[in-house]
Length: 179
Image 1 (spheres, rainbow, N blue to C red):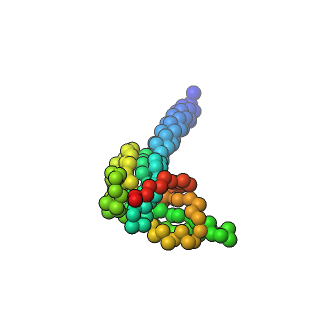
Image 2: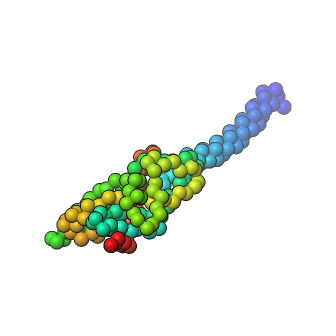
Image 3: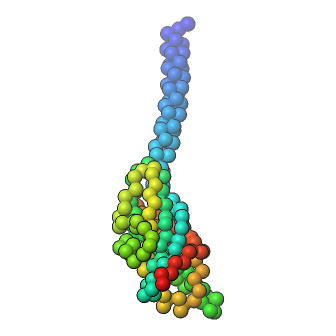
């Protein structure tokens, strides 16, 4: 064997070893990318809502408060916070068209509810990663708004700290009247 042939065979072996090492490195890099993408996606998961109970509380002064006992779960691997809670009430008018009224959560309405102990969500409540929180959402409702038509459904909307909106619907709620 000539020196040139030995050098050529050595070069082929070195090239094969380099190709195998590059293929192994590519597989490792793909696995690392997959893990990083999965972790990134788990940090930005939306809040999950579960409606436990809804009530319509009417006092003797015809004051009306809607209350919803809501469980909010943060399945993400990073903390999240509740920025705003809204109640979207959908009405059906006499002519069959629909309309909406949006109400903002008011934590200090818990004093308006007599005979029931409710703990409302505070403004900008933080929820730790992979945990849940259960409290009440309270909304002041003007009974005169029922002139728009009959209520079809109630939609709770929660806006989180990253701008994502989570929703849950309810079609029936309990009514309590204080005499």
